[in-house]
Image (cartoon, rainbow, N blue to C red; front, side):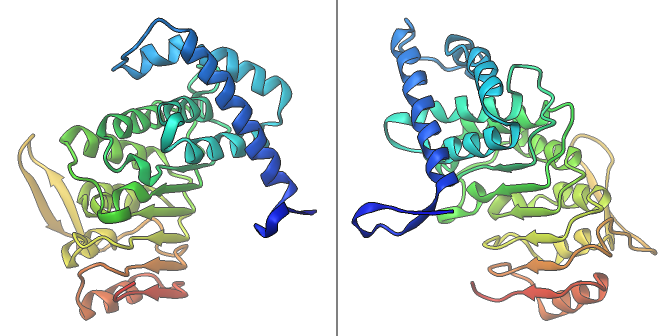
Length: 283
């Protein structure tokens, strides 16, 4: 069903309008709770979560809205609160989406996006990644890490952030579509993690990742394996029998904006026999 908006602003589905209405209502509730707290400055997301009584909100949402619709609403909430007066509510929507009533199971979450509004906010990125890493039942099929590549990418990535990112990728074994952009695509350990565990991956988007090179291609296709000797030394070991978990499932690979040679493009085409589309060059 299509409902036309007034003043010629285009067509939007009735479902979309309902999602936006619920998000607006949730923002009003959370803003009132924020105004009722005695906290002017909060640096810890957990403390903020308790003050905002998110478990109560999660319970009410579960009781009144079907799980699939609730997830769509909360994803819209994460996107809609990325700037302006509701910027500090973004973490609330994300925690509601992933952890719900505090159980941390994450079994209803199948799609997660880290929006571009996190590009300059390392503290929130760490919180988002930590929340994902705590999921007991990771059923993610779509993961979009666009914040690492949008508008020039992040300014800085700490070792802790890299470790959390690899942990999330390692636990997301049901991924079908993965968007790794910017710095997130140049972490060789992360690439090895998905090459070893994501057997169902069909779409891999590495756009706008100038740090992604021929060496990274070798890790991705399983030609080279990283072996950690100690906290500071990682060796690259060439494999006689290259192995990649999604060798037979990958259908689309986007390498636009990556600095790789024609020989690596050929290597990719040879390594994934069911690849239907390879995009490279400038976007």
